[in-house]
Length: 206
Image (cartoon, rainbow, N blue to C red; front, side, top):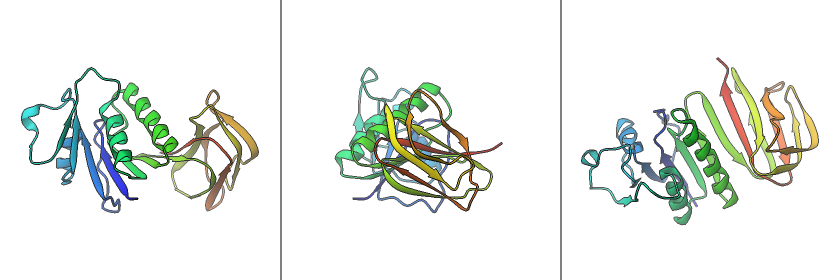
């Protein structure tokens, strides 16, 4: 169905030329970030609480919302992308800054996954993605750790092979960080799971 790039308003973290997308949503301050990256958004989602309206060019469509609302700007962008039929969401500039927004963005990833979309958050030092079952192959990343978290109540029948800490047929829950700070023992790690939504985090080791 296509790939949608969402530019959020966390710490600025430009994407590389290798990232491809079909549609771009800028979220509030993400509009400035988009211009800084040389990207023209297809639409802007904003309540203008972190961007001056005078800095916005009205030559692109705008979905404006009040500051007092249930959804964050990034969550509104996720919902808009899903409504447009996109099934692969790539979010950048969504980490760092305020912890509350970072947590909200991860919950937004779970919302996207529950609604049938693959969701990624990319930054210079972190790569996050959702996994909803079946088999996933993770090629080795030198200098990175690999962490797996359940972001539903449970992820069932989880097996991990090719890592320093392999498991077989285990249940991972969202109340215990069993999958923290694993790493590659082989050139690739294979993860299988029967049910749940898993958050896969690759983090640069500093």
